[in-house]
Image (tube, rainbow, N blue to C red; front, side, top):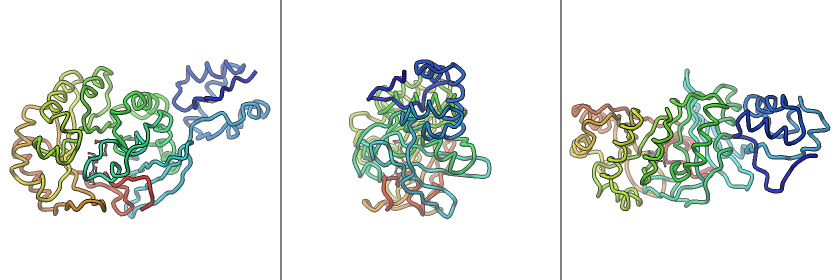
Length: 343
Ligand code: SAH
């Protein structure tokens, strides 16, 4: 007898053990579990019809039981070979995913929510509001889609697409498990980027993962941060930094602080000094992100010289710094430009 309920949970995201249990429930021999696992995670099966190793009879019986894959609704390639995908989910919602290739790496920038409720002033995603959290399979699917499209293994994942991952911790963590164990991406090459949600960084530390945590600081003081990030009001910078210090102590992992550079707003020498003072003695690193323009606001991206000056000012204070020159700018695929539409 085939057990199919009306509320079918997709199979993508299940471990080998869980898939084996599932095939057994369907009255199939145990070894089918391993086959299903390989077809879902390695051979890109999008439906049971694709799994030709299964008997025609069983495939017809199982019908359209969901594996949990999305459909590529649109794909655009930037001159730097970054590819932006609009993926259509089973309920019709559209999310964005970005594939960023280099010689050695293939990084996928994944979304964790449809839209985002945080609404940072400089970010296109927040301007469109929030619809819902993504399910774990909808996150894993993004990595598989890019992997198949590039015909190359994904090496890195960054949760820097649409949404705030720590407002969807349960599904994000379950996706991280599967991306690591089933898709085969090393935990150290998975980065979760968060604006900082009270207690969630502390909770993340308890999972004892090897993933990298990136925290979007963007300002050197509370007043400035509040003007950019609405939820900074209820979760002050001092509390956020204190929670980050606890995280480093508990996990022994370095944190990466993201800092957007907005000309004349948060990129002056005084800001660098103020920031360095707050981060003194901290096992961390600051990743500067020159602002990527969006149409709704008129912040300016600093010049190359201004960017270098800010980086130097931090380095002089013994803070480790890197500059993120976002890829995919021309395809509106860069940090903060993802809005779930073609324009
Ligand atoms: N919600 C997560 C992930 C956001 S996207 C977070 O806040 O960290 C990843 C990074 O891009 C964040 O640091 C985000 O603040 C930054 N970002 C958003 N809009 C941007 C823009 N227009 N230009 C440059 N970086 C931007």
